[in-house]
Length: 373
Image (cartoon, rainbow, N blue to C red; front, side, top):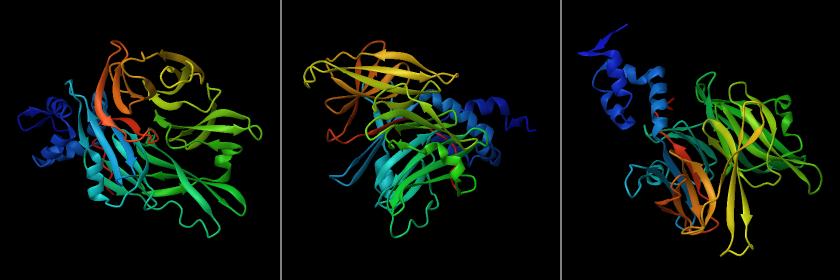
């Protein structure tokens, strides 16, 4: 094994290079073949990602239908009074000018985009600026079929170190409601359609939407509800193990359909909000309770958050960022960072245009993972 690169011991040089941003590493690939091979090694890519996770950014997206724009920004906290950002929406539009991002998911610095306009799924690494249009999952529904908007999942399979996309598509035909379940592997660039016995957990379940789901430690989670009658429902959570490709159903700690599934310190959590006050917009106050799933499969109450209504009336929580900071949404629609310790707010400089426009907000870290074929 080579013990040095030039005048530097390889272990010391590797330690230095691991701390560089992806942009710098890509420039240094041409320095020497040994550097290029080092940057492409699975060990270096994995170690670099672990370091990147200590300095998480925020990626925010919403669809501006009024101006036909995919508004996507990468928010970076440089410990300055104002947060800076990178315009990912402009980069996306320059590569795919007629794209309509209906949903997108994030895991380990990779984005999985569902393009409504062209009925396709695209993987994107913003740090390396690589894209991959994955093959079509469903070739033909048939003429008598309608519906067909997929519910997606995306994440890293820790057993094979491979990225996978889960597609659960519900559609209707003369035979009634049906579902199509398939798993895509990035390493083979192909789909595997799941057999009927593999998806029996979906019987009598109504799945949620792409707005509230999450991947944690190789398991992807969606909200769902089990039908107990014409009106009555029992709230559930569907979990898919990316390694074994097995579904299971978990009881939700909530008795109502509200709440958001989000990662929290390498655990899956569900955030619930309670409305207090006289229901008038000027007097209402929300208390947010966070439940965490432990190793025994039980939900425990982790934290209760009661932001003061002044100077901002918080109506929604999006994600834990870092250092006890939350990305929150006030009634003004101006996204803010809320510090749990100081109780102070910091402006992100991002505002949705309309009360009914629901932004996607995820944590993000730069990644060297290549998605080229």
